[in-house]
Image 1 (cartoon, rainbow, N blue to C red):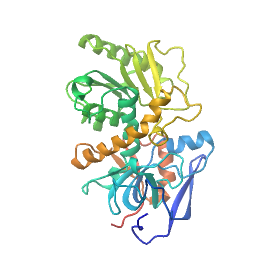
Image 2 (cartoon, rainbow, N blue to C red):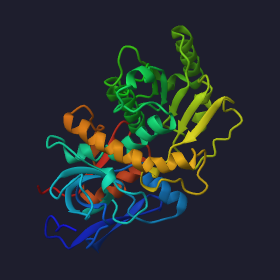
Image 3 (tube, rainbow, N blue to C red):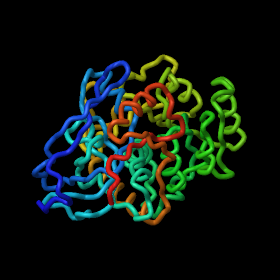
Image 4 (spheres, rainbow, N blue to C red):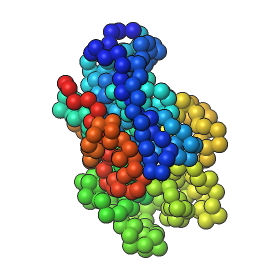
Length: 367
């Protein structure tokens, strides 16, 4: 293992507790003294929150460092790591539920979910990318079986409509970014009031529908669009996956695959259109190659195993397009206080106060 970038031997790390409201404690831990062969230790400059950072803890009654999105500078590399080097500016996806998470001064990640970023990209923006972009990529190019944008045959094979419900969410917008790069379209985007950023991603062939007009009106509008344009709607994503939203989305489709994202639901409602296959995306397969026992609507075990190699290829491509400036992060809000601000950010997420933005924490500020 190579030597550490910087003199720190100990670090501060946050433990998140499933209390009401969400609370945190900060403890001092030893910085890892050794790494696995394909592991990377990163000095964290920025970390970003995801809803699962509090949802998983509350549902399972766990306390841990639940942060998995981070950006910073490579401090240590394992003996077999070749894609990044000490001193590189990177973003990374930390394995869900594992030690040395993102809410700390140092965090670890497998090298295949670490990518280099451009000097011009802020650590704050970079931290918004890893987890949600991999979730979007697995959904589109593994579960929905669209052709990935790094395949030269993409445009011809992907010229088919895609419906994205909750399109103004971070997940919804990353799905649309990747779908556009892959040549999918038209996009039928269904969202709410925080649509200013989303509208920069859509073009004249795409359609935005406001769900606040009522679900019956949205269904009617979708079917009218499909009929008028002589489309067949076989690909849809429910980035909300709450309050039975998947039932309504399935009824907008002509069949095909509907992707959902909450592992706490069963998706066996009587109202789901009979010719629609519901598939749950669990982004942890990018590290583990398997779903957790009891998770709903899983793909084949072979497909899940393939997500490890898929994640490596995706992050390799992602680093290239990020450094080229053709792929960017999500709008974000910095929560003040560094690690002390994590509880505030997670409670804002829990209370629905982060619409249209990712919540980010500045951990280190030296350069």
